[in-house]
Amino acid sequence: MRGMQDMLRQAQLMQKKMATIQEELKTREVEATSGGGMVTVKVTGGQEVLSVTIDKSVVEAGDVEMLQDLVLAAVRDAMKKAKTMTEEEMSKITGGMKIPGMF
Image (cartoon, rainbow, N blue to C red):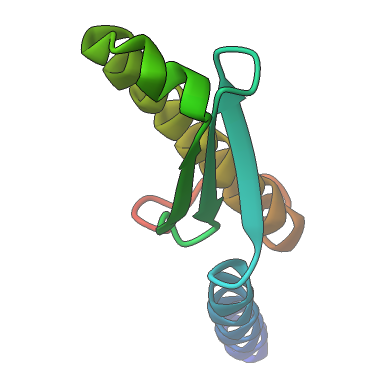
């Protein structure tokens, strides 16, 4: 019975640590660019897009499809970086164990 209580206590501690890390990740930022730096996107570890910066030369070119592709590529890359950052931080707590629905 004692072993079960210890396991439950450890699970509760892990849960608290994970919640703390998730809150911290919401304040951490990652950045991605596309088009050789023509489009830059900043995203939080909480998957919130903070900013999109577009070089004037891309707008002046008037190629809307290219601009859309550059923005999409930068957003996807930033989201991927944010997800990777989250997974890395969580794996430090879980010891690499994948917990469904956590991240």
